[in-house]
Length: 222
Ligand SMILES: NC(=O)c1ccc[n+]([C@@H]2O[C@H](COP(=O)([O-])OP(=O)(O)OC[C@H]3O[C@@H](n4cnc5c(N)ncnc54)[C@H](OP(=O)(O)O)[C@@H]3O)[C@@H](O)[C@H]2O)c1
Image (tube, rainbow, N blue to C red; front, side):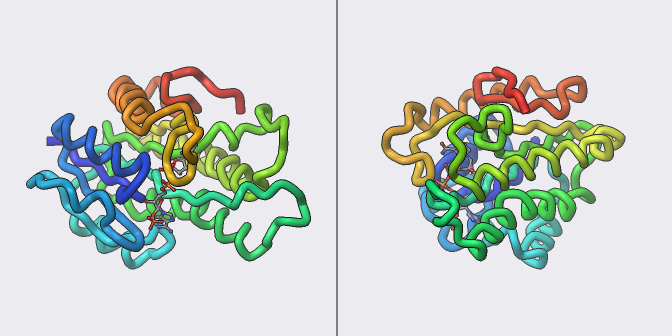
């Protein structure tokens, strides 16, 4: 049975990933920061739930030690920046926090998970179209955009090392999805987005490592 670790799994896209991974026969290690939220609804022997703040090295280490192997690591947890509209709105302390959660912490989780990743394992970084520099026509959302661009570069910089160990990397834009972060006007449901993400994960192999794609497989310009 394949084993997956999902961060930020208590709501939104992470919760739906957990549901579809369980339905697909994965053994899922789902992590949450503050409360189990929607994870309480599942009744499955194939689900293990852990408290894990992605900023907390000790909590990450505890989860990784509890897992025999990781076939699929999905770095999904993320935070928004309040959609800052002008430079004057940027709160520097919060900007650093967004960069920490969205860009640095996925690297920390991947670093800590390395002993349990092996030939054939897959790592998914939940990025965003907002991390694309060429797509940044409207500006704004400063810290969120910068955090996802940084995540993309962290990911590509680690790609060679992962390649050498047979571990493939996928940089994913889930689409604009109706979650707490995406808001009520988003055109995509979590089910639609995650169905696409699951297909992308299924088809992912070493020849595709380092792709930056939408949930439906369309490539994104950096
Ligand atoms: N929704 C969209 O339209 C959209 C578009 C592009 C990219 N994305 C990306 O997709 C991912 C999931 O987004 P979503 O829409 O599902 O957002 P969401 O509904 O706001 O959920 C975010 C999740 O991340 C968790 N989280 C935040 N900070 C954390 C931390 N320090 N440690 C552990 N978990 C933490 C939250 O936990 P708590 O419940 O404890 O806060 C929650 O489970 C994010 O990386 C986001 O940037 C989303």
